[in-house]
Length: 370
Image (cartoon, rainbow, N blue to C red; front, top):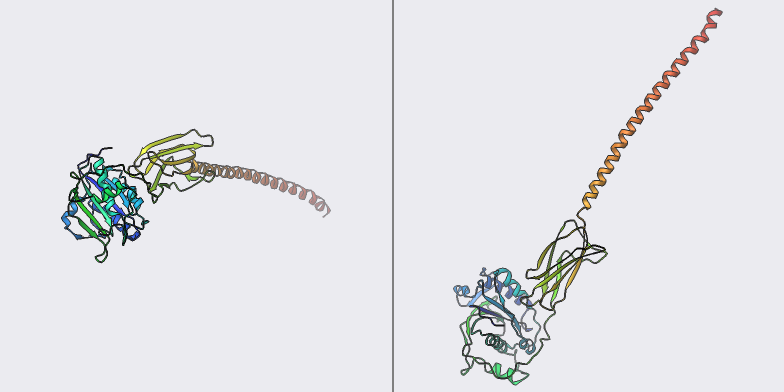
């Protein structure tokens, strides 16, 4: 693939064990601030001027790539995947998150790392680019007291022939950022590296796999993790799906599949997504949501949901039904009680009449007697 963008930016991140994880975390934040033109929150300029920072801000159409370096295997595996920047904040964040920012290696092949970037540039017709290096070993090739152990003559010639008097690479002066004046850890920014007069060595580049490369892992963050039979309950027809991708390569695209089970027929797929979010409208039922990579090997993730938009309706219906039964019973019971009261009243009247007649009859003999 040939890249002809006006501004090609390459970032090299030192993952040797001499670098602290907290330093890389701070560097990642500071780099994001520089690339997006945001104010620095922790880093300060140790070399250069504040005006220099404008040279390192990404603009729409720029190309950004990031690679880690350290041990021989890690550094030989450098093969940048340039990303065209359209939405600056979103795309810069995605590129930075595509690399591992974890110290793992015992050595620091920094000159080899620079030579690998130059090699990539020459192979892709790039004569000028910007180079940003994050490291604590700017002047300490191979690691403290280390010696190179190149696997072949091509690699040895690539390094030893990089930026020599007969094979020059022009690196413009670096602007540098630090977090602590007493420490070596530095972010170095060169606004222009010119390889137009640089020539690659003859021979074939060896194919070496980076044994330190972590597996790319996709993790769904919402809806939360759930299995079939214990689905996450959703009370809306809108299913919002969000996920993260740890160690995923630059330019990765995603596929999201929502598939209904237990007799349901709904099935919808969204492919080649760049953002880590997707929205689906689904009917009531149980669904499996799967997020995978469209164009790169990465472990996929899934979760299960149970959509029931009518759940509250049934509760309301049940409440109304109970209320109707209660009201009906109240009026039925009231009418029944009225009938009982009328019947009781009539019975009392009958008893009174009978009692009155008996008294008159019993008094008659007494009257006659006296």
